[in-house]
Image 1 (cartoon, rainbow, N blue to C red):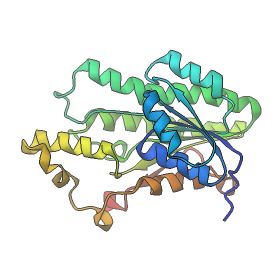
Image 2 (tube, rainbow, N blue to C red; image 1 turned 90 degrees about the horizontal axis):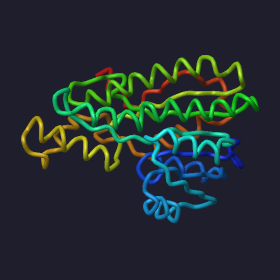
Image 3 (cartoon, helix red, strand yellow; image 1 turned 90 degrees about the vertical axis):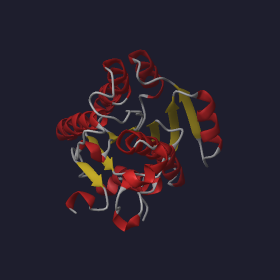
Length: 252
């Protein structure tokens, strides 16, 4: 199937590794051009070298309003924005001080909100565009031991639905994806934190994943394939929703 995304200009935040990098590769394989955004210029350069097709990079700290505005000023004419940057720590309410909590939300929660505001304004002007928010299943299934992330994800889910409910009036689609545990460095880091807090031994991190659907975590390429497919004009009636990708685990 031709997804009709060839030639589209795509901005992927948090694009130097994990799900973001997989999304960039998936768009490139469909003929789109991609701009990767991340804090680490060196990691961005290495990521760009690993990808096929036309790749631009922008080193920016999206926890800072000025850097978000810089990205929007230089790439605000993108056809697709994928909000994916985030580094929210694991732990319970008493494990995360307010400075760390606010720092984490500055990148993912306020970062997604501000980037959406900036890019949506440009998309609204021209009457076309798509914004994809990669959020996370903790927003649907909040837990004490990931309270900062679960609360932030829940807020972003509500934000995505509210914006995506109105944006079709301007010819723009906004939707989200809630990945469950996905094979990235981040899932290992979070699982080690849980294992240390609950078992006193971070080396037992795999025990924190429990019994998984299909006996495995999700692959970044699976999240990426869904993101690209849903930006296609062939599924242009999708807006305002946040799709759960958890292998049915929430219903077990």
